[in-house]
Amino acid sequence: MGLSITVGLLDDLDRHDPEGVAHHARELDLLAEALQAEGIAWREPAPAGTGRAACAGGFPYSHLHHLRRAFVLHRRGAAVTPAATTDPEQYDLDCGEVEEEALMFSSHLLCHSDCAGYYVPADFADPLFLPADAPVAGGGIVGSTSGLLAELRRLAPAIGIDPDDPAEPARDDPYEAETFAWHLLHRACRESLATGRAIVFH
Image (cartoon, rainbow, N blue to C red; front, side):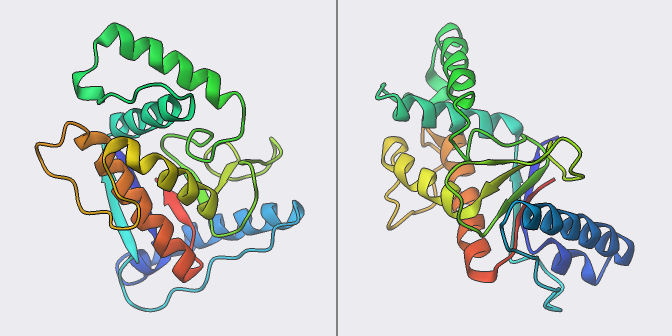
């Protein structure tokens, strides 16, 4: 199992799964209503009729954890080492730092469910924590697409990526897991901002 990431989920379901379209359209409407209550104006555009998502892909949950670890090490000014070659004991210590940093509630990459929820193309400085009774997937934590993109671009050089010319990772790249997750999230952010559609974790 792993994490699926889609921009344009309704388009992806429109041709093949009418019941799925209705369900997810309602979920996205509930998200829009909850955001409106917080003063954020956004709504998922209607399906464009293409029959395919603007961006879709996925990776093992561990790839996201490795990317978050790299982000925290870089943010704290520590050396960023590949998860694949890091001593397991040190990796566990690094994960403790990820948990500490997440409790600052300031990172769109860190403060988000691993397996469900949304990033929306609206600007807000910190991740949004909706009220506990808000019927929004991912525990009601919503990220900003532009906020996530900015964090990814700041991290990029530390894992060997030029953010202005992000070539796909080589298979022998020691940061293969981190860069695979980075590239998919980066593409999703760009498509989300270009189309006005949410990034959906599912």
